[in-house]
Image (cartoon, rainbow, N blue to C red):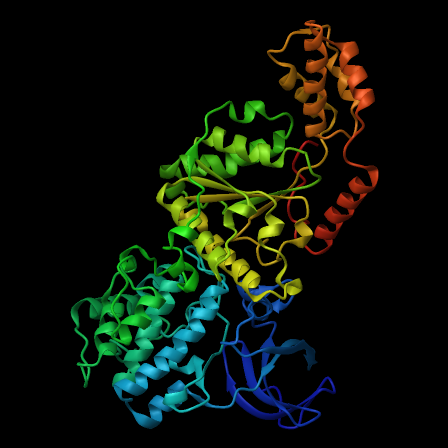
Length: 592
């Protein structure tokens, strides 16, 4: 149903020029601004938008994707807003107008394209997909109707449109409806709710096949589009039994398309490999080790340079685990139940389809034991451990840091399960809105790509930060860093336990742990560690036991290292996270 007629005025800013098409819960229009400049508008009927596709902040998840995705391969987001029509709520999205022709129209007009034309168009689409994948998003609906070309094949420039199914790579129930996807362009695994970069490569190969032959691969007449189970079974049988052929089978693109469409999910080519194959270029020697699920770019190519490889190695840490951690009982309980249990009990995880979180950010005042907890987590779990500092990822090469990030996750994936701990995470993934350095933005993009569902590769990430407000918001969401945990100042009970732990196995006499805990209000864990060590030095000078008097004198001589003003700033920071919806849905876990 068309809700807006030609000439309709939208918020005194736009005039409807033309109705374009209707979707399941949206309509598409061309609109003009006051200066007569053209834009695309997508109008969403909020009542018809499925709950899974709604977004609390932006109304519709597709709009949220536009906000996160800054890529020249998709139309630029220009405006958005709400409309009320006949008592119904509508949400509109305004994007740049991109003149050209849909690929589906090109195929309908030409019937088939030559191999050289198809190659140029495919390369243009691949360039757009490369940008999307580098930003951490799979399109999940690459078909001829979702590609617009501005020029003829020789100078083809592609825009990938319709982001209604775009998401980070997922291997569980997708956050969008799937019954409107075109079956013939879907990768086999998408029928089992697996949507990854590899699926986009399959779809791109299917699009290339359509350009070469005039129809989708294994296309047949579907009599009942609603019977997805029957469609899947029929299509699966055809893909297994029916060979593919081309008019001009000598061109490299033909062999590459067949290989991409016939390969199993695990053996599918990466986007980079597919691009090389359709051009007849020889595959790199390490092609077999590259994953089709990861965007390939200069960073991963350069990682083979010995001077650019990361030196951090996975290690098994031995120790007492959480027995050495004072307080934090809720945090330890949550980690044991939600993370370690799932990783250690694979049979139960498979039975109940449990998915462990990807990562956890520990934030709060400095010196409260965030990094210490990460180390003890590795001991408690018995998993491999990689402790990474920002200097470990530094490089003088262009894209060198990107290469080291990719190499780091590759090493972790080879030794699952592995815990990667990033200290001072805000320095590694600063908010891109305040970053002018293109290289630094690319490094954040690489992190986003590697963090996506890394738990499924046997990797768990623990990050620590004193300034979570400086971290790029795209990092702090489920599917990347799932848990945000505020680690506050240790309370009295935690301080008492810290004194016990630090004084254990030292010569002591008549220590009143309750009084020590009361005297050290607003002292952080590193302060207490220093006080115990300083008291031990004093006692050692006279070769006498550590006494209560020595301890209290040391406390009087060493004030808290975190000022009251600093503590207030962290309280405001916690409130800020709550107001933006980042931590309001996450419990306060830590010493208290």
